[in-house]
Structure formats: structure tokens, C-alpha cells
Length: 137
Image (cartoon, rainbow, N blue to C red; front, top):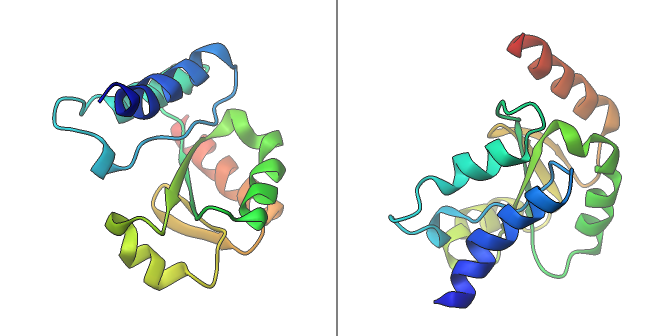
């Protein structure tokens, strides 16, 4: 139980607090118990520099995935502009994503909408993030 609490709650929060980075790994719904519904909101809020909610960039991945690791490295220049959520498609609760994306990872969704797959498309990412930032004003 302590390990689960540490890995699903404390590590993501401490990562946000100790790093100025907005990239964090949020636990999947199956990992969040009914006693921690605040976690998603809290993680996103703490990771944001201006205390407003940042867009969520979801990475559909598996372990190991060298292409996914490379893609995450390519995202570093944008890390202050979104919260990164990693979804391991090999977990039982994510089997629908596995069926859909098993041959296409890495796959990215921005705020739950498909954005890109196979590699980071910098132009598309920049355009979508700018659009979201403009609409927040």
C-alpha cells in the first residue's frame, strides 16, 4: 500500500514541486482510488507555473519503447506548456488503447483529441498549443 501511494501520488507531486518542469506522469484512473479524486486536479495545478490548468498531452506508450523515449526528449522545449500523461497500453485496463495503437506508438492526444503518431510533429504541436493558449485569454 505504501509503495502504491508513493508511486501514484507522492512521486508525481514531488516531481512537480522540485522541478520547474510541467511534465509529470499522472496515474491512470484505475490507479486512483475513490479516496484520491483530487489527484488529477492537484497534479495539474501544481505543475502549472501560472496556477491555471495546462493542456494535457497524453502519450500512449509501452515499456520498453525507445521511440517513445526519443519523443519525450523532443518534447523538452515545450514542457512548460502542458502536462504529460503517459498511458501504458499493455495494462489490462488500457486494452482498448492497445487494440487501437499497438502498431503505432508513440501516439499523442492533446486534451483527449488525437494529435500525432510515430514521431513528434513540432509544427502541429506548436500550432495546437498556441491555439489553446490564445483561447484561454
